[in-house]
Length: 432
Image 1 (cartoon, rainbow, N blue to C red):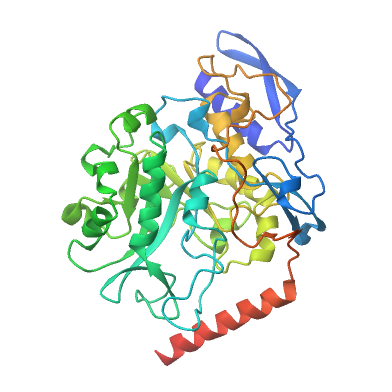
Image 2 (cartoon, rainbow, N blue to C red):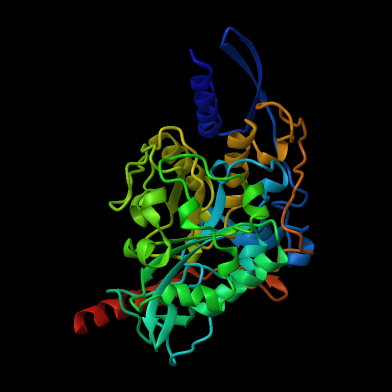
């Protein structure tokens, strides 16, 4: 058996196993046998009871997860490990990054266009806070609206007062502030593009001060080659990748057409169907070698806050394994989710640690990787060595943590709200 095939089989075994394993290997003439050593990773206070986030250590917050029977508040992970802080200098496409689906569609966002917003929400804290917590990819829906470009969660390619959030430049300025303050970080923006104004996006990003970070489309690999290293991207200040769903923008404005560079599975409910992972119609086949980035969508068509903690737990890792196999044993570079902080413990953050660990160093978690060591040489530690973004604690500003006590999710009220939203949208579509 060839060595490369052994690596693929090894990575696949790490995924499908219900427990983390580290192999001790003996190889002769490319024929390897693996003895499996069980390793567990613990975070101080993770899953312990709490009454407020101050009861939990850095990187954790206080919440609950009734869908899996965890009604009492406990400490839940809320920050990502930044893989480049552990293993640096590899091509950008060797890493896996957390992406927030509809990053702008935030519960409790101010109403700027009227007394009521009728749409679905996908996140719970500001874009600034998402970036601080380790999110490195933002999905943004941009529309022509009010003689400007707005972020809007809408339908039929039009933005309405009842579906609008805010001018896009506000969010882009948050991104600029983050990049300015963190000179080694790289952010990806994926635009669902309904902007028709000539050079509209070019002017928008320039006015937001983001043009100086722009990764030129002329330097993007077009035949599935490796991307530049993250080190070189930081040195060149090419730290903002922008992709659009409008193919005409690449020639007209120099904005990369998303599906020329990124493979992508189906979004919405098909993307969470266990055991199935197929490409969306605009994307090339997931096994295609003509693109070196892979975006995995993992979010339901209709987002429900109360169910997100369950969805972002064991079922998520199962779907990562499914898509890994469907893509010819290629690891997703981007993992897009709703309500990214909700889980029954480690959530998407633990999953990304596994993904990066297995890809970057052949270990069960990126926290076991050792810079400069051979692939498979893992740190034999049982305590998580967190390299979360530098901040005093998770500064979560959403609804999971309420002042003075952990939040309790009321399923009935959420069903009423989402039922109202769904009915209202159907009514608008009917009247149109």
